[in-house]
Each structure stands twice: as C-alpha cells, then as structure tokens.
Image (tube, rainbow, N blue to C red; front, top):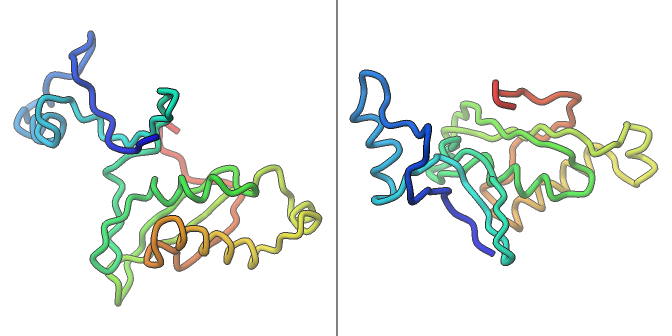
Length: 158
C-alpha cells in the first residue's frame, strides 16, 4: 500500500516525444522531475495486491498559508465518506491565507429527504467532512466553505 507519482520507466508506441516549438518545456515537465522515468503528472495509489488507482493530477495545487496542497488529495479523502459520490476542491483568493479552499460534492443517491432519513443535515455533513479532512490530512487542509451541489464542473476528459 503506497501512494506517489505515476512514472513510467520504458517508452511505448504513440508516446509524446516533444512539445511543438518547445522541446525544453517537454524535458522539464516530463523527464526532469524523476530522472530516468517519464512523469505523467498523475498521482497514484498501489494496493498491496499490486492494483493501481489514479488519484488525480498532481499539478492542481493550492497554496494555503504557505502549505502546498493537492486538490486530488483532499477529494480522495472526501470521496471515502459514505454519503459522498463525487467531490471537487477549488482555490479562491483569500486576503490572509493567500488562497482559501472550497469543497463541493455530490451526494451518494441521497435526495435532501433521504439525507434526513439517514440522519444527515447539510450543516452536520459539512462539519463531518471538515473534521475528516483535518484528521486524515491536517487542520489547515479543512475547507473554508463546503456545499452540496447537483453538478460538478468537468474538464473535457471528465
């Protein structure tokens, strides 16, 4: 059981070999961070059985009071909660900390009425998620704002 950066040791057919008009950037981005390996830019978790789970992009970093924190790291913790189907963490300008953090999440097959049946209120769930993040990562990692949403923003790749 280990987490880290997903790096590939051997070339494969169809592998990128440069960035058009910027070969130096290609080398700095993909080959310099881990010499001898191709750095994909993704975080990964490998189970003791040898299975791999991508945890998200490592370049999505929020700087909170001098602490660099990956959004995927926080999302991974939140997504382990029984009531959460998906989550997204974004940074926003903060006067004191430099950047603040906002967490949005989709409920796991829970309508607002079903939430009440399971004993959850939105405020209670928000506090529970903040506490979970504080315990699993650090106190500074807890988001300033938590909201239940009906949709999350998606990139072209999903």
